[in-house]
Amino acid sequence: MKKVYTCFCTDIIHEGHLKFVEEAKKYGELTVGVLADAAMVKYNRFPSISIEERVELVKGIDGVKDVIVQNEIMYDEVFRQLHPDIIIHGDNWEAESMQAIRANILSLTKEYGAELIEIPYHRDPKLTKIDKQMREKLAMPEFRRGRLHKALKMMPLIKAIEVHSGLTGLIAEKTMVVEGEKIDQFDAMWISSLCDSTEKGKPDIELVDMTSRFRTIEDVMEVTTKPIIFDGDTGGLTEHFVYTVRSLERMGVSAVIIEDKTGLKKNSLFGTEVEQTQDSIENFSAKIVAGKEAQLSDDFMIIARIESLILDKGIDDALKRAAAYVAAGADGIMIHSRKKEPDEILEFCDRFRTQDQNTPIVVVPSSYNTVTEEELEAHGANICIYANQLLRAAFPAMENAAKSILTHHRAAEIDSELMSIKNIITLIDEL
Ligand code: SPV
Ligand code: MG
Image (cartoon, rainbow, N blue to C red; front, side, top):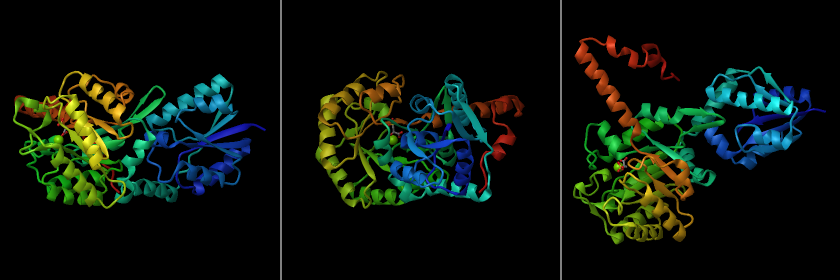
């Protein structure tokens, strides 16, 4: 009897899977690997049921001899532990990520003297619709909101990218890179006050009102499924913040980050070049308490952002505040810095981790951008926010196009730097 292996990455078993198993078992004794949570999130989408439930689903299929958990999207561990003779896979290899998986399987089958059998992928419109519905379900507020919380338990470092529109939301949702045997994508989105304001041609001083900021959230939500972290600035008056918390959780936002500043807020990256006032520990803690009391769902997170390093108050002050904000109920701490080097952030993380092993740490490496995700993770950071890069990429490109047209009195010269007309009109799928 040959050892046959295939991997499932699904929350529901439909006719298509049953037919696939029917076919696969003809080749020998079939083991099915169920892709683990973290790998499923990186490679495909967030699972809507637990790994235990997914294993049980597959166990229930007639013709499946054994079920294991496949921890990585690539098959190295499967070969090392199981030594399968045959890998069965659908022939849906179009995407770059799928090609990387195919290359990995082929090199392993060669090394281990095994074989890859590709079964024609069945594109039944009914089944495609079920898959699409599963994906869209992830966009519903109840499903989306708790996912940041869940992701924090699944992976050591969550990577969030700034979004300020439907289009940037799509980039955050869909951009995937294949690097050797690794497939990577962003895990969450950050709705930055700086970028949301700048996009509207306004300064980042809490001038853009909440209704308008909520409109940005809606635009992003309409076309994405990933969890959203909202930049709540100072949170405003406590009496207003409690309403913001309710609105955000109702919309399906996963977390709000509020910073311990008071009075007219200026962007943190100005540091002490402009007048900025840090709130007292007592006031800001009271705001956190009020927000947590107002919150109705279990999984919404209020993250407290500490501005001590921005305002040159030192790490001791930041640590004292971190402890107080956690005691007030903060679900996470964001520590910010405008230094070129990551040293003070890494020192804060190390020292915070000696006093608190569990509270998630959020970092924003805009100024200290040479730090790697690996280093941040090693120092105990849990969420890394790339807070403004998409907007900063777009502005010079647009300005360059505008200047070229003015200079040449026509658009021909800039055309080679632009997305083609064919691509722009087909970029957005219709329902
Ligand atoms: C933002 O992106 O709006 C932030 C981060 O708050 S920073 O601009 O660095 O203050
Ligand atoms: Mg901001």
